[in-house]
Amino acid sequence: MYAVIETGGKQYRVMPGDVIRVESLPGEAGSVAEVGRVLAVSSPEGKLLAGAEAAQAKVQATILRHGRARKILVFHFKRKKQYKKTQGHRQGFTELRVETITV
Image (cartoon, rainbow, N blue to C red; front, side, top):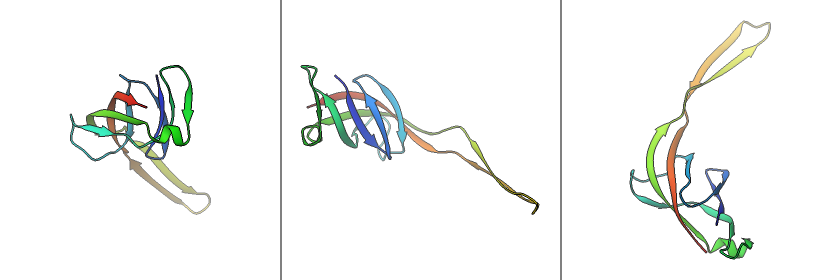
């Protein structure tokens, strides 16, 4: 059984037991969180439910930890103008373990 969820503007295909990194979510490490919108879910019979049927499904996950990703460098440059600017960025994330998918 799997589900397709949307959180933080991205879509993830998850199964119970999966560990995923999503955009930062509120909550303490160790607490149970209900994950964003459910777009599609496979039923125990193997049928794929989407739309209104999938909207009633719920995906619960445990928050493992919060953190920040590796630094990426952002470099701005304008030719012939001697303009150069370097910035760094570290995106925050929340690591989740999917516990249950209920249809």
